[in-house]
Image 1: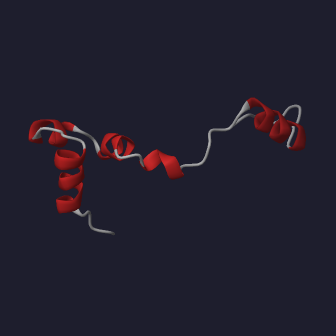
Image 2: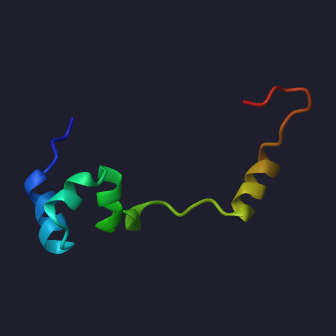
Length: 67
């Protein structure tokens, strides 16, 4: 398991984002990542056109239980 760079995260939160210590420690890791712009590398959400494309390619079979 990778270790977190707490010193770097604290610098980014306290200095970079201007958070107070209590605000920093109240954040979840996901919230901090979003505030630091980590979502920029995340894949784009699926749009309706892609969903329809997948539904046409892999149609539900009648009588097959849904998962």
